[in-house]
Image (cartoon, rainbow, N blue to C red):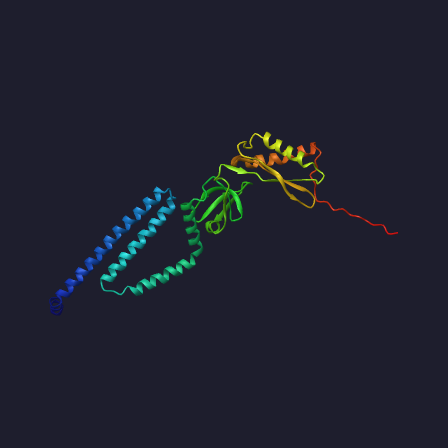
Length: 272
């Protein structure tokens, strides 16, 4: 006991310094936690103001809080005189290993954040992504859910969406219908164009303030191909598309204008 008392009396200054350093380390951790919470809340408010998905804002807030708090812990340990370089290296290696193991999920998550922040499409839009066309039903952190034209649910990883071409058919109020109509080489082109023009002008859903393009586009092997390009509201696209095809077929048949199909002529020479 006397030896302990004697040691304490001889090292009072050193003990006092240890106590002060420990108190400062605790203070660094407490202040770091407060700063981490403050920064996290600030980022969450900014993301909420931009109408970012709640799941994304919560996850990002947690990541920011953990990073700032981790830095404060490292700073506190360093203040106590410990070498933190080895600890940081070990944690970094562990983080790298976890990142490699979860790289697919992390890629989908990062892509989900990009989709929510950049908003190339929203729920209800008709899009074509990753080779699939459908109506967007839900945008999740790791995947996006589409409803196909035949009412199937299609779930696509977000990384596959951001890694390819995104075609959004719902962003513009109007769309152009591109039809190619082939007629016989014997057909009267002027009469054919007149019929196509009348069909386009008489259709109630074709926009009259947009010019309708009608012209010869190709002299093909078996037909003269004409294009008919009217403009419609995006919501009316498919209805007008199917209606025009049927009306054109019936009208050309009534006018005696042949719509040819691929044929092969066989000529036989009879030898004497």
